[in-house]
Each structure stands twice: as C-alpha cells, then as structure tokens.
Amino acid sequence: MLRVLFSHLPGAHRDWWKITIFAVCVLFFLDRGPYRAVRYSTTGDFSTVYAAGRCWLHGSNPYDRASLKAELIAAGAPSGIQHDQDINPSVYLPAAMPWMVPFAMLPWKIANALWCLLLVVAFALSVRVLLRHSGLTRSHQWLAWAAILLFSPTYVGIYDGNPGVLAISLTTLSICLAVAESCLASGLLLGVVLCFKPQIALCGLCVFALWKLWKPPLLGLTLFLAASLLGILTVSHFGHDWTWWDSEQRNIATSFESGGQSDPAITSPVAWQMLNGQTLAAYAVPDRCSGNYFVWSLAGCLLVLRLSRTNADASPWPNVAFLAALTLLVTYHRYYDGQLLLLILPLWATMARNHKARFALMGVCLLVLAFPVQTVFARMLGSQSAQPSFKQFVLLRNQPAALLVLTAALAI
Image: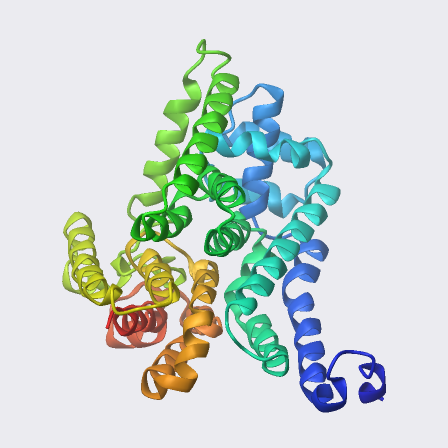
C-alpha cells in the first residue's frame, strides 16, 4: 500500500522503503515537537519572549515578572505558563522585542501555533539547503532526512518553543547563502540571529571572519544595532525610564548565580541540561571564573590546531563543522542547541567515503547527543542528580563529554 502511495515520487520504484522510513520519522517528529507544543503549551521558552514582546508593545517593563505574568493572563495563556515566569527570568535583549510584535499582537493560542509553524518551516528550509551541500544522492537524502528528524535537540526545542531553533536555522541558512555568494540575504539573516541569540550568531561571525567575508557580518551588525536602538528607545520611553536596565541586569545575575537556570556547577539542579564545557570543567576547577578560563584556553588550543590545517582544506565545511561544535563548547547552551551540530552534515557525508575511522568516531558522538538520555537519567535520579559522584558524571555529563570529543576530532 505504501509503495503505491509513494509511486508518483521521483525514484520511488527503488526507494519506496526509504520514503516509508522518512514518513514514519515525520510522524514521530510532528508528535514529539509541534503537536505537543500546540496541544499542551507547558513550557516557558516562547512564553517569556512573547510576554516580553507584549510588555514592550504596551509600554511596560519586559524584564519585570509581574508585568510578564499580567500580559500572559491578558493573552489567555494557560496557568502553568503563567507560573513558569517565577523560574524563567526574561533576559532577551531589547533588539529581540521589535521582531516579536507580529506575535505579541495576537492572543496566546494563535501566537503559539504560528510561532511553532515558523520554527518548523525555518528548520525544514535549513535542512533542505544543508542536504544540497552534502553531496548525498536523492536516495540517501531520504535516509538523511529520517535521521535528522530523529535528532531530538530540534524537536525538543520546537516543543519548548525556544527561539534557539529559529536562530540556529537562520544561522545555517546564512552560512549556506554566503557559500552561494548571496551576501545580502546572508547578512540580514545573521542580523536577526544576533537580536535573539548572540551566542548562536557567534558561530556565523567566526565562520565569516575565517573566510575573510566581511559583508554579511557588517550587514548583520548594522541590523542588530538598528533593532537595538528601536528596542531601547521604546522600552526606555525615549530615555526617560531606565528601570528595565536594572531589571535585566538583575535577571541575568539571577540566572547565573548558584542554583540559577544557567549555573553549570556540579551541584546545580539544572546543569544536566547543558552542553557547554563548563559543566565538565567544574569537576576539576570548582571556581566558575577559573572554569571559564580553562574551557576558553582549551578552545583556543583546538582553534589553533584547526587553523593550522585550514589551508589544506579545499572545502569550507571542515571549518564550519568545527566552529559549530566549538560554539556549543565554549558558551552557555542547553540541550536543544545541539541542533547547531547539523552543520556537520556536509563534512560528515564526505568522511563516509574518505575517512571512515573519523566518520565512525563522529557518528558515535552524534549518537550520544541524538537522544535526551540525560533527561531520562535526571528524572530517575531525582534529587541525587545534584550530588557530585562518578555516577552523576557518567549519566548526566555524557553529552557535553561527547561534544568535547567531537570538537577535538573536528580540530585534527
């Protein structure tokens, strides 16, 4: 039956079983990501930036929790979403606020559904463009699509409604457009990413700097500065009220303090959600500042090693893949930001033919990162997840460890 259903597709007489696998993975992806995002609406990632956009639009402080809650109540958001503001402080830059206006003008249910649709479309476009650069045949692309749809960081991010999905998808498109010499579009997309997630845009900025391609970063920074100016002028009532600035600084400090939502320490109850190398360095270097220096020094050594090999590469993708992994390793990122590792795909496809040992090693690392196993173990351990032990390291830090190995493999 399925063979007949797909018979009209190009090459389907040979690939119907691959198309069937792809179709099953699509259903799985839609169920785990978009369906849950729209049906249950239990996460606070989109609600925070959505409520902040409504505050900005209506002239109130987008970094004040009471104001955020009031806007969510007025928009008809579920009670669980409203209470989530007690633990998720608003830290998005003023530059993000103007972009949220089209959603902030809508009631919660409609805005949430449209935001989810935007994330899915942006993700699909980024994967389609990446596969064009992979060199895979049409037959193998069906299987690649299926594997990508099972790569859980993306559907976890879509379920959460996290802007990181949009930022990573636009970063991917920006880099691919630059490869195709469409610098204007590349720069504009990079500018949008800077407004929402500067730590994600860092990957694109480093790639363009390495290529000595300056037009996209300049365009992106110009767009970012323009959005920042508009955001700041509006939120400060044209310079008359700077309460928001104190609130944002306080929210950022709260997020990174001991026990906060961005604390990478061994005893942090949320560190198992993170991918950055600081969660590993904390075992050897408890002091947070020293841990940062340790990770950044290690990253610098890996960067020097990668740059020493750059001239030997005819393809741009080895550097893109390395910088994608390095970006996740050195800056604060949660599990769903692992979507950025899809930028490895063009290089990995090439390695399948020429460097089978490295292909296998990278495949094992990606497999460790492909499923939310740390989430499962964290739920099993409960309060023990914040107790330092060898078991904690193995069960709740295996994904940042895999990222570290992957980054090192891409450096050589």
